[in-house]
Length: 321
Image (cartoon, rainbow, N blue to C red):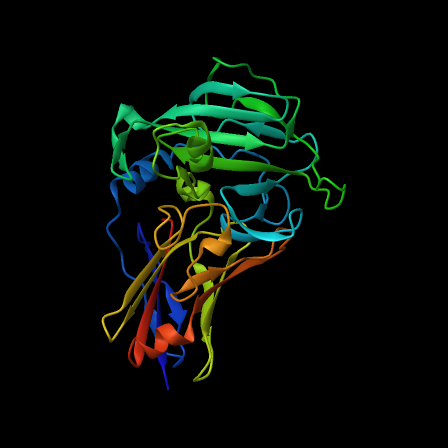
């Protein structure tokens, strides 16, 4: 019988011990990890940011309607890599700047704000040294800012609007919220328009909101699968903080595979989830939106990877903090 051990960790640690169940029903405690330079920069600003829809209520306004990472798009009827989060709000709820900055784009339903890291510090991201990050908002109405305007965190930039699929189905009142480090352009746009950019700059916006909820824990994780099958690890997080960011799989054979959503490690950073190599551990798409209490994600460890990896594999699950 193959064995999967599970360990939950937090990048910034917590005073509360984190526990997670493995297949043998033993509990193991998470450990504090060192964080990378860009994560350290985001951690410093996260104590100073404002949630973009300030009337936040975990079960209503401010609820995250669609998580960062692999999701199934109802409108497109296909699996995609969601590059931000959809924040639920009531129609006409104010949308505000999450941090001090300058407006660099303002359209009928879209605003992009440029921000500078605390104290103008330089941070390393994908080997580049950057001083700025960008917040991007889509799906608004009554945009009330113009390009070049200086903003203080909490300044209103627009209101929550209605948007729907092209066929009119799946009407939602939420705002798309993305954060990009070092560049306002996605990798797809950079390739299309010839910009000298080799990485995807979008990261999970929850990196900028460490104090959104406390404690930051994955509520449950469990492995399923018999000998001869792929192994599925089901990871559940609370509805208002889908924060899992990194999976580290290590086996007794020495095989190691890492999936990092914000750094785009372990898979092709394009939009198409078909780019996931399914001969090694990969992530299944989450359902899109309207989850009232929790998000459930699935890490799939293929049978052939398990067969070639010895009789024991450990999976460490790490959140954005």
